[in-house]
Image (tube, rainbow, N blue to C red):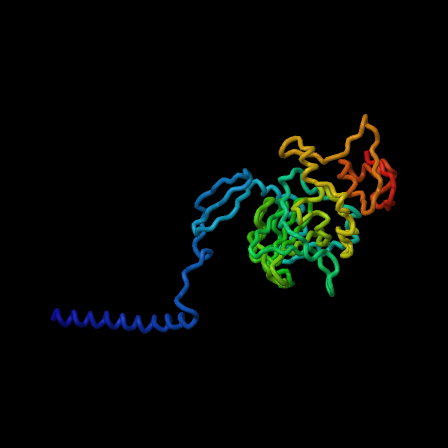
Length: 349
């Protein structure tokens, strides 16, 4: 009796195992036909719970470590910037353009862009020679500059800001990161091998936001870099000396005429007349963080004059003498739109 019961149970177990094999084998065969054995879960598919917070050298920045062995920056202090209108109005994270209801003619004749207060607030996105400049190029317009780099070279945030767009763009940009900065300027970084930030991230000056690649409409690895204000592009070389990794101005007067695709910085800036901003700021620095613009000194408070040379504009003259466009206009009885003449004598202080 015991033997018959044992044999019966063994037969049932064997039948169950055999049926399980028949059921599982086709699934495994199907998986193999699809490309091998089932893959192990990816990191992003694992439970993601915060495990620890690590401080960094920047008091505003912490690093959160998650249970799936990933991490991200945490900047609670920068969340106060959410209240700034520049990060709320015309904020479109799905499209590259976000100022569709603002026409060029509606913009002010000149916008004074405060770029930095100290040297630590700027970092050149990449350093190298510009191969293709801003302006008309064959049958289409080139709205930025191209800087050849090695694949995988890091691309850095030029200034503090917030990421408005970070994904693959099918319009030719490839992997594209757009950062809006507190002064309203947007910097565009395209053809990236990989985006290293996400929409809504606050980034700090010098943070790696991506890596040089050749995604999209690109021939060879390079960074295509654009500067835009209210979606209107202008030559990035008005602001950046990419070859030397320098910023040209502490405050930049962005003239509406610069939004023309034919307005090139290289045709307006004279190399030998450009001040070395870094040396000027350091020479006038009160300490390592607080600086003021370099300015020619006058004896006994005597008036200071400037003789207009080729390429001079009020936006270039004012920072050079540590004054403002409005003050120059007041001293000379002119306005922002007045045409400067070669050899004209302007009182600047």
